[in-house]
Length: 63
Image 1: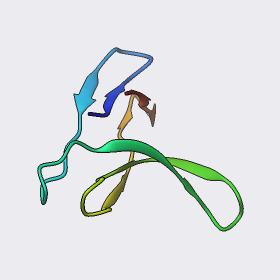
Image 2: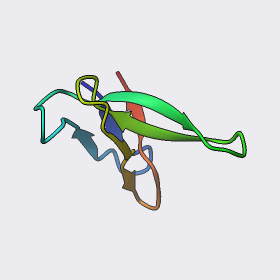
Image 3: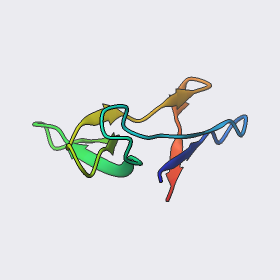
Image 4: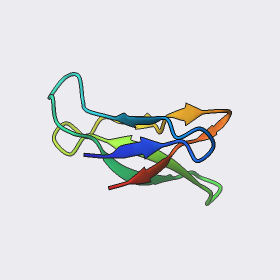
């Protein structure tokens, strides 16, 4: 399961899909301009969300 942790305050969250109850996995989404965005993806239904934020910054993922 993807565990996201804030590098500033240490807050951590585990993420799972509400539709499938599957643990989300860390992934990158490549935008049209070539830049990437960290996302969480469901391995079963392929749903995607932007990775969580804390203290005004993306939380990093340790799988």
